[in-house]
Image (cartoon, rainbow, N blue to C red):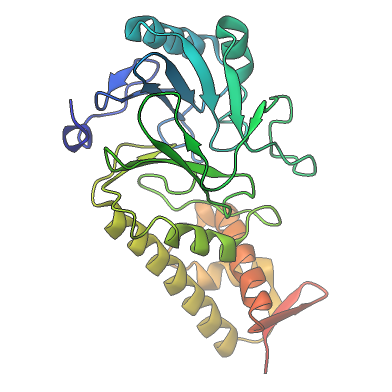
Amino acid sequence: MVLADATTLPIIADSHQRLSARVWRITAANPSIMTGPGTNTYLLIGQSCVAMVDPGPADDAHLTAMLAAIAEAGLALTHILLTHTHRDHSPGTQALVAATGARVCGMPPLAEDPSQDRDTVIEEIWADGYRFKELGWPLEVIHTPGHVENHLCFHCPDEQWVITGDHIIQGSTVVIIPPHGRLGDYVRSLNKLLDRGIEYLLPGHGTVMANAETVVAGTVAHRLQRENKVIAALAKHPPASLADWVPIVYDDVSPHLHPIARFSLWAHLLKLAEDGVVTEIDGIWQQVR
């Protein structure tokens, strides 16, 4: 199996799937409107050890599937790599550590963010540009704040793929929830994935995506298109609250998704406020005249 073939490989919950010689996928059975078909865990196959990326939720069936994949690989699990510590990505770490003794690597949970898993202990704190060498092949850490401040992506230049966590997901737009999600950071982090020769995106939710740079550039363009729609709406309509702006700016989105769209609009408005384009007074947003 090579990644070019893996783009058509369907998601199968709690069963390991070989995407290439170096990376296998195990998807947790936690589908939802926020997680799509479920959270993807990735097993990285090294020369003398293996590493697991994002053990997902605390779930016995998913733990069993991860341990089965490790056993089939026939190598010891020495490291657990976390893209971030949201509760659909990291709580499964604790049971996996108990079963294997692997070291946990990533960026620490944010104590002030209630959406984060604060029970997972990070033993090795990684930063942008760190190179993980224990697998016997290069894996580069890319700090990608935006979805949340402590988000990392993992780039394998040899096979031209990047594990994206919740930085880019397949089939949906990533939700940015302020204050720990910041749209300006998100767009800058997307641009960090360009010009690296990346061909494949291995998302935290969904299937493998080819033509990575086109997908990344399209994601940036979509965000800027929505930003321009926000600016146009504020120029056309009188000042209003965040809730009032949602059906205007997201008139192309099903109303049942408006509660989620409200977070994205909030992120857009905060970015535009930072840019000096809009202002907010007592919950009322308006264009700066």
